[in-house]
Length: 203
Length: 203
DNA sequence: CGTCTATTTGAATGTACTCAAAAGCGGTGG
DNA sequence: CCACCGCTTTTGAGTACATTCAAATAGACG
Image (tube, protein in one colour):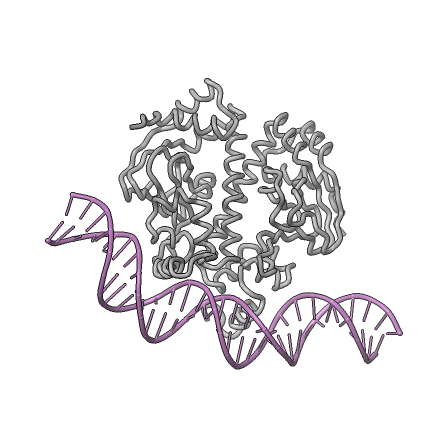
């Protein structure tokens, strides 16, 4: 059985492998400001109406971010598993009440940093400004791609693309959560899946 | 009649009013690297298959960014008017072929910077890393909001929200372009507009 | 096992699309 | 000043994609 990295080591490793790697000192400053937190399945990192006080990096487990519409239906905006971030940027930066929920779909561990501490890192350590710029750019690109599909593709196409683009999410999420992410009902996703078996892609 | 700002002055003004203002030296470095370009109505800043070589800041006029699906239909992802940016980040940063077009809807003037020159600015002048981080964060927030509407709101609600959120776009864009942005057909938008007059919002 | 949630099924319905065509609107040239 | 062109907007009939609601079935967990 694999030994898990210590949470803070996982975060340093994350920057090392995909961004401008941190110096020893930067890693120490990071460690000083991030706090570990474990949450149970169905616990919330954030609820509608609260201000999002922390940026959260997922070390273990799985989260969804969703909004609830006037008729009470949930709409998933984002999932996050190990080595992904989940933060309501709108609430976090403007320090305004969130319009979304962030909820654990599995028992989870996150590393969290307060707004002021993050701004502090940005101010004193150039590299964080840069790494977070890149991080958000990547998020923006993914989001734009998803928006394009949402306005141009059928439900079946969106499901196909989801399976190929996010297999690591698809494997561990219930279909009802995926349906909500795709903007369709669970019933309709079920029909799509049935049809895929009956009349396969190209055969 | 108002005197227009010189293009580069408009860009400095843009950072001054909404971001961390630039020093004289930073403004000079900016001026050194941005190039002015005027384009006619219907001219392209970017076409599918090309690599997006420039980040573009709109000084005058109006653009749309759109993707074309397999059946040849256009889907608008973004508009940009004065003091807004229009750049295919996915193509620009990865230096890969774009999947979108950027086309002038009116005669326009833009300021453009090359990929390498922008990275250079980031490297030598901390503030650009920061200002562009914030810039992209704001774009991300707007995009997430739009995605939420796309998966949760009806066409009529999306149109209403568009009118209230982006009046400066709504005023100068033809309905066919707005329909494409909302992910509906022009015909259906026309029906929505008719119904709005017949049975007004709350009366 | 019993409970809770996820998934599937079916019938009726609704929202938005397609296609075709007409009407409106602004510019341009004769 | 009028006629014509290109483009946008509107209208209508028929259709397709996806939803709603209700209920049956299947899985997972303690």
